[in-house]
Amino acid sequence: MSSSFSSHSPLKNNPLRVCSFESRRSVEMKGLIEKQGGIATVAPSMREVPLEENKAAFLFAEELLADKIDIVIFMTGVGATALFDAVATRYDLPEILVALNKIMIGVRGPKPAALLRKKGLSVDFKAEEPNTWREILTTIDTGIDVAEKKIAIQEYGEPTPLFYSALEERGATVLPVPVYRWEFPTDIEPMSQAIDKTIAGEFDVIVWTSANQLTNVLQVAKMKGVQADWLTAAKQCCIASIGPTASARIKSAGLQVDIEASPPKMGHLIKSIFD
Image (tube, rainbow, N blue to C red; front, side):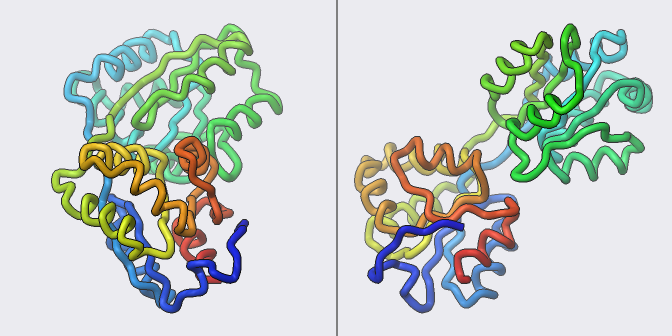
C-alpha cells in the first residue's frame, strides 16, 4: 500500500465515505465497506455481454480440433465460461475438452484455473500475483519455449496488444479469442449520480476494481459535460486500485494511485483503505 496524503487527507474523516463502481460483485463490495465502518456508495459501471456471433470462438475450436494450436491461455473465469458456452453451440464439448487435455494450458489467475479443474482440465502454468499478462510472460520466460508455437488467448473485454507483440517477438503466432465485450450497465443512473456526488465532494475514497470501470465512468461524465469537473474532484479523493492493470488506466487519466491492493483481491483492497 502507498499513500501520499497530508494531515488534511480524506482518510482522516470518520466514517469514510467510499464510492465503488463494482458491478458483478456490487453487493459483496457494499458489505465489505460497511463491515469496516465505511459509508458505501456502489454504482455499477459495466456489464459483460457475450458476443452474439462469435466467429473467433468457432475458429478457435476448428483450429484446436485440427491440432493447430499448441498453447491456450485463459485470462478470466467469466471469459472461459463464455468461450465454452459459445463453442458448445456448434461443437461437441467433450471432444473440445479432450483436445485441450492434449496441449499446454496457462491461466492468468485462480478463477479460470478453478473452472478448468471442474471440467477435468490440467493447468500447466499460471501467472504469479498480481496476475497480469506481464506475470504470464515472466512465467513463460522461465522455461516455456513458445518459438514456432500457435498460442490461443482468451481475451477479457479488450485486446492486450503489448502481450501479443511480446509473444510474437519470442517467435509465437498469436490467435486472439474475444468472447465478450464490456458495455454500460442497463441502468446508468446510479453511475451518473455517483459522478455528481464526486463533483460535490461527497466521497473520501474512490475504489477501482477494473480498468474498464474508469473508462465507462469517464465516458458517462463526458456525456454529461462534466468530465473535467469530475477529474478535478477525483484528484481530491483517495484513489484505491485492485492491481497494476487498473492502476495503469487510472494513471493514464491523470489520477494518482494512493492505494494498490496486494494481493490483488477485493477484500484486501478494502481492508487496506481502513488500515
